[in-house]
Amino acid sequence: MEIFQILGDELIGFFGIKGWLNLFRTGDYSVLLTYEGIKSAIGPLIPLLLVIELIRALTYKRFKVSDYKVTMTAHVFNRFDSRFISIAAVAFCIGLLTPFAIFKSSFTWYWIIYGYVIWELAHFVYHFLAHKVRLLWCLHSAHHAPENMNLSVTFAHFFLEAPYADVIRTSICILLGVNPPLLFLIMFIDGTWGAFIHAGENLIKDGRLGFLNKIILTPSHHRVHHAKNPLYMDTNFCNLLNIWDRVFGTLQDERRGMKIEYGITREMNPNNFLDAYFGEIGALWKDVRKAPRLKHKLLYLVMPPGWSHTGEHKTAHIVRRAFLENEGSTIKREPLVVEEQ
Ligand SMILES: [Zn+2]
Ligand SMILES: [Zn+2]
Image (cartoon, rainbow, N blue to C red; front, side, top):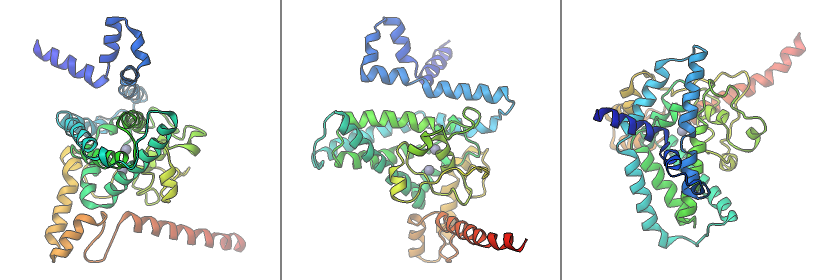
């Protein structure tokens, strides 16, 4: 019967309902006024939404096992190590870098705003590099491999990505004066929102969320980020506040009439876990091997995906620019066509 005990514990862990179970057991609702209490109360939200999304997909007969197979396999695969390495990495960075912080912040509302802006900057840096440095793309691409959007995509990550992301984000935040309690609160808000923006069309059809689309990053923006359409490639790197996407010119709204094509441009089998998880590493290895000189081999590691030693680059930047230039010339030509008619 041990197997049922293990399964039960896994389910309680996945749904994050330990806090609620303790609450009912002890009857001490005052914990809901503490940070830990709020955290454990909100914990089941994303898994619950995932279940609703699944039920809706089943109801509308749009449920496909393949939409969840690879993402959930990645989750199970990472279940045992990723989180522990990540927690250790965060603790290490805090211990190492706190003495070098440029100043000390406290736990007040204005420092929370400052901390969030800095956190978004740190997130932008991690995420931008994950798309622009081929070696780091190997860690991030498993998250972009799914060709459908749903909440389970939140769990699709290469096991070394979380430690990499947390080292970059924690280091920048600590050095720029975001103190650890503030950082943990921000990480919690960011983690919850970051999961929610993966809500697929089965849960929220129009991901723009009305006027919010103008102010913050919505599921619609993140759907654009997961798209391989030329216009959408390498855009919307932020998570909640879109300031840094505005500053660096990478903010892209979803266009009505342009259907989102999810996934990555490399030819792959999206239903094959090994291809989704390790495929980019294999592709990089092939390019490095065929590169004629050591300089080219090293450049393959650090240049953006799509860079080639032959000069025939197909990077996201080039593909997107070509699309916009082509679109610009088409728009310019169009009035002439109207006049001729
Ligand atoms: Zn990304
Ligand atoms: Zn995502």
